Image (cartoon, rainbow, N blue to C red; front, side):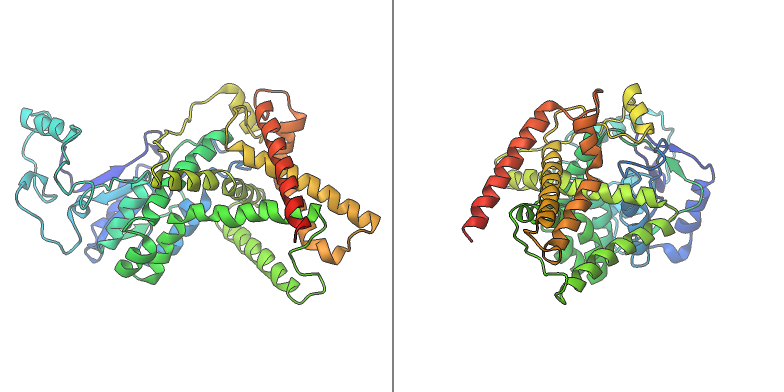
Length: 441
């Protein structure tokens, strides 16, 4: 409404923590050497995170680590909040010609009317109407880009493809603080929505792996593809959460023996990736326990949020179902808040997202127990099933909050009985199916 040349976007639950933030931003956007910079992105920072961040709510990869890498290329992605935009960037690429059809919309136009004047308020009502953008390029070629549940990612990506750069600024003092969900159903539902929105972009004509690479080069294309194809992680994570364990239960090993030269490759890939990820976290000031909880949540999201997100997206693509935008609840419940502060997972509701988690915990525990029993009885050799035992044991350690919620708790945050029964039946069905498959190989 003021037609100011700079715009700040914030989530409704965020607030300023540093009055010098605008001055820090101006150091970038008023620099003549940075005329191609569309926005300055500050990292999302959150208040109220418990000591060990049990739900990985800090999202350090998404909001701090990955943006630093992209900042070394052509600029970071837009995360929807804590961002100062150059208004000019919403009207076309940095070298495009601005139409003079509506001079009052030109970002260089000087407003000489009071914001409370009738003419300004009349235009504000017109712009706020539900059909203002119909028949125009707004939301498609100009402004914030619609058509995806992750309009922030899509907008920043499109601006980058138009030739705009951006900068990630990470001061020691948080520029803004925001809130996070404090129960796992809200966390997983939020990630599911993100997954669906990102897949909408990934499989559109603006796919980063094709359109993005062509527009901004291979590295930026791959950087944006890393986000847009998030949901595909559900495939390898789900496979490793179930297949090795089911084959271990039946005494079959799909992996090389310890004495096999290929065994060292598995060890190198597993330890190398985890050590690198841990170092990334700890070099950014995180603790080992926070890193451990974050990798646990990555595995949990892989067989819940990402899996359901992929299913929802592809069903919608086939016209079978539809999905909507569900706002993440951040209402503070006293009991939930108490559990969160204590580092205890909050389940409580019979969410379908909990079914694969509980099923995986059951299968991992049974498979590990059967594997150890086979070793003791001499029915299997350690070098043959070593990798499967490690994977099952690793799964058990990561599933401890689920075992706790299933067997050891009686409060409102425990795992609902309906989920336990359904997951047990599904685990039994998978064991039966795997027995049929292995017996016919």
